[in-house]
Length: 77
Image (cartoon, rainbow, N blue to C red; front, side, top):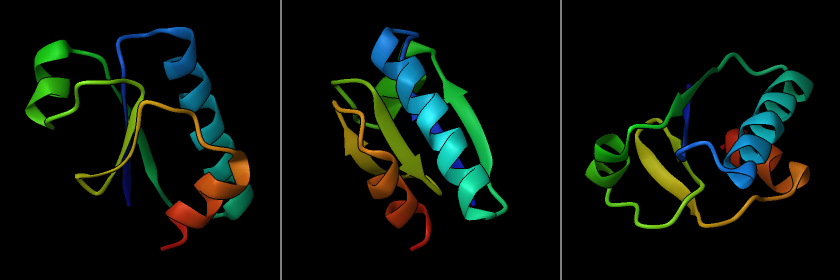
């Protein structure tokens, strides 16, 4: 599983990255967590508001930082 955090480095983007890392660690799921911070790459996903989360190339969260519990349910899909 590949989890991509889309954001330019704002505090919310950093918080989402940290939460995703924690959700992956607590869930015990094998996943690659990647930061996507180049604006042209973010726009290529069609994302206009950050932070955003993509799971295996599909955008699942835009413009907010979900709770740890919500992230855990997203990555267990």
